[in-house]
Image 1 (cartoon, rainbow, N blue to C red):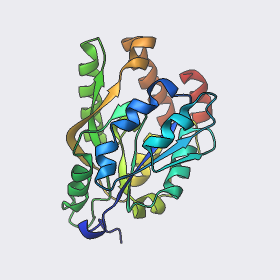
Image 2 (cartoon, rainbow, N blue to C red; image 1 turned 30 degrees about the vertical axis):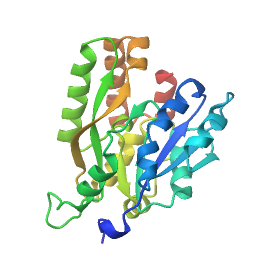
Image 3 (tube, one colour; image 1 turned 45 degrees about the vertical axis):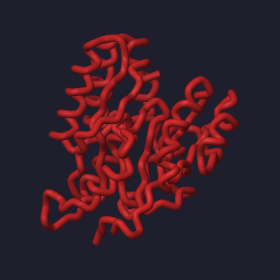
Image 4 (cartoon, one colour; image 1 turned 90 degrees about the vertical axis):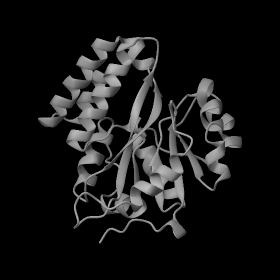
Amino acid sequence: MMTAPGLARFRLSIVVPVLDEAPIVEAALQALAPLRARGVEVVVVDGGSHDATAALAAPWADAVIAGPRGRAAQMNAGAQQARGSVLLFLHIDTALPAEADALVAAALEAPAASAHRMTTWGRFDVWIAGRSAWLGVVAALMNGRSRLSGIATGDQAIFMTREAFDAVGGFPDQPLMEDVEMSRRLRRLGPPACLRARVTTSGRRWETRGIWRTIALMWRLRLLYAVGVAPERLARSYR
């Protein structure tokens, strides 16, 4: 049976996959320093950067390791390195709220919606930072869809107990939609804790590609994935 971590043995490990992120990696990891001061572990997994990402990350993480390229593979490698009883997977361009550790602990200690299942995983609401006011609408739609479907995206800083991670076999070995597939697997263990507290993620890909174009692309990819199109094929459309 899945058990939520008791506060006495709760330790949070944050796993951060990176690839060629030298311009932003230092600031992103520096923002985690208060959490590290409270005992949170930060593990950075480099997927073969050609810049100074790994060197710049080293002073601001408990461990920087080399992993196979691919976000899912990197997150799995980080989980194996991490020592925490709870794992949180964080994109480098996403910032956690200051009290993220306490929020995660409280969520996993709270009774689940079903009396027969424990709360073993969850995610935050997301806010998308950028120039366009439409990004707030996009974030609200993402949060609402996630709350209704029980499916989380990587931008929402998915967290889970190590038991839950191991029970579903980690992230699937696929180049896209690994967050959707992971959510589906975790949902079999129980519903997610959908935290109202918000992480803030960069709107750079939305503004670079165009907001409405990106929305259309993501919905198209999700629909094709839902009907069985291989993630390898979808990944070629996403690039």
